[in-house]
Length: 468
Ligand SMILES: [Zn+2]
Image 1 (cartoon, rainbow, N blue to C red):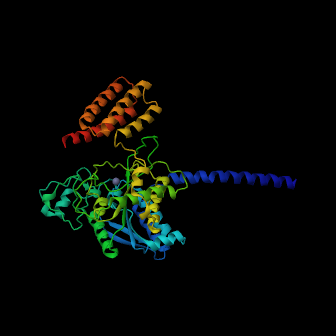
Image 2: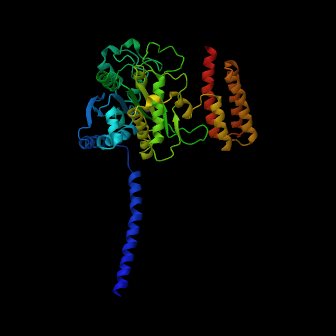
């Protein structure tokens, strides 16, 4: 009897144990998904834990103060003579940069691995994980610096039109337009409001503090090797497959390639920036244990020219610069561990290829040819999208899809001939065809929206050609 009882008891314990084991991962998963983006307090707490655990390897500093007087913290690790500067959340509604940087600082600050040791020996990483601290609190893209405060800070701007990148509704500036390749530039009323194709004005404390940090690093090392800036965007899909873009990477928008506008900046080296961008794309795959589809080039039309972005201003001063754009902004998109891992792995790509010296042996052109685009640059891109829309049965009849593609095939010929007149004429004809198919319900809404917006974009560019 005793033996049987014992047996039942054992079975009971076994059953309870199995039940508990089943429950543990379930509660673990739900706790994980309830995790939110770090608050500033949580960030400061984790950073100070990392500093303590790093035994002097991670150092922090107040890089400066936001326009509203809050501390903007920088962290530094490594003793190498190649400097990598990194910022997260230059836009306050784009939060993954700080999360990934905390992970990197923790690993490099506490690991004894030979990889960590070689990174610390070869590279000095200086990071501002939570750059736009005031915008992050709301969250909003801009900082907080209402124009009346601008005028009390700079009385000589009284009566001037606010800078074009000042947002009236949010009472602040897009920090990533407030940079100037002349690092000693001081704002004057005659230069306002400026233009998207002009430099920014270093109006905000935030742009000034990053500029100052950059100058200090230039003084200390002679040269700031690289700069990476972490952003979030919409949620685009790949042209050919329709799969989600999981990370988009870019080099500085200082186009077009044959522009003479930047001839006075001999240090600008777009090929080098492309090598660093390629290293980031490689890192997303090399440092992941998953497949990692959806690694893409960020939108970069030939004509794209944004010299007021931090990455452009630093590139014109000889730094290789890389932009990350992650899908989904805050607060709409919650914390996503896979996404944060992807940012981290992209940064590891840059860091590791710097540490072992292999970054200089990469071919920058591979970034353009090996990493897929998801935006429409030309008619060929539109035909790629059409193949997918046909497979997805976005057209009522095969003949409707064929009609659209035949029209695109004709456009492709004129595009290759660079015949602007014919392009404009036939692009307009294509618009009429699309409109007709929509009215007669021969085309799905998704295909119509995409093709129509692509056509408008290309039309604008070819009409400009006609004027030139
Ligand atoms: Zn952004």
